[in-house]
Length: 215
Image (cartoon, rainbow, N blue to C red):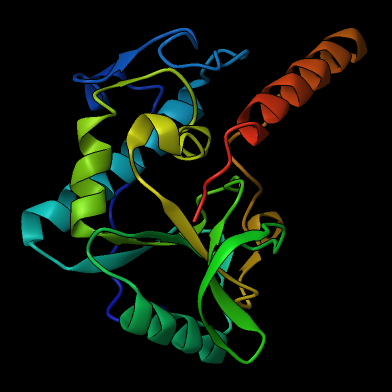
């Protein structure tokens, strides 16, 4: 159980009445272009995060922890991570608590034991758990009235959003989608299509890596 948790209803990307104000584009809104079409589930996830950002702004919170429903936390490590946020964070920050400790630091802002609060060079994917400051939420709302790629992919593009993305890792978080019915973003692809998708994914990942965050 997360501290002072509040459930925000998710947006159904398949229901057009749930997303009347969002414009979706075919991957060409920003550079590098995104080589895959947006799926309804990805639209729903993006709009669910925008709903959370709007809640932070509307209620005037300094920051809030946003967690997806397939997150499992280690209570002691989460408390340590939130203490690092309290000591080193601000209303301008977006801080990821990813389940995979893959990012390498451009800057280390603080630490507690083996846990580090970092500015990663290349921002990782997934939005399973993050602390979002009020000013960061407002900044992201302003640049996402139209979308052309998933929310985690857009967040990698600090040169577009103007929003630095920090991370705390390792943090004890785990993903338990397999225990609650699996991810809602899954698709079966034929072998030839899968190869092309992997080539496009590798190209896109390389383009993002060419634009690292810097201290």
